[in-house]
Image (cartoon, rainbow, N blue to C red; front, side, top):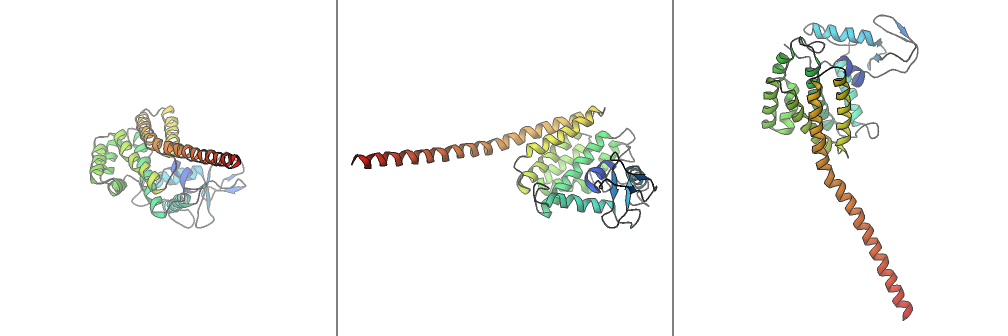
Length: 276
């Protein structure tokens, strides 16, 4: 049994994977429909010239999800792996220099992506229906138990240690998704701060909270607990960033006082010279 953690959802495909093509007369390679308006999302292959519409992307994902033993989510033309294309794109977006990306190394980008995958799967556990759809083939409780033994959790052990990893896996087994979010966010923000050298982690967390609040507003009640976890992470990040901001502010004031003091000393010496 698999959780399909290696295969992205349709929302991930829009956001992270295949991008949005330039608006022009486009023809879907699957259904042959054409589109000339800017109302629909289109996806394209990074290996060949194939393009396909959002409806066909959803159908391809559902087929790969329901028949994961026999069907791979791949380009309809060249059969290139769509998850691999998405991973390449996500890595490049993180390693690109600012403002387009974070300008981090490939190793840090892989760590951030691993944490993002864990966070996304946690959100999916809260979003899915009682039977696990649209993200899973089993009820969320069963999926969470499988996830507790899955490679998606390995990043926590690598970056936060065995104790945090054991805590995360235990919380998954007991369906404590807010606790899972707490552990994952601790590691994610640490990599952002120490690895990617992001000036303000709070900004990233506020964006995340905004997205989660939109999901909660659409009727997904379980997402509310994840919003509380992000609130706690924001508080921790502000406490960590406050001394840095204060030291920078104090440092600038100290430098200003030194410059002012030096100017006053020069003025006094000039006055003494004139009197002599």
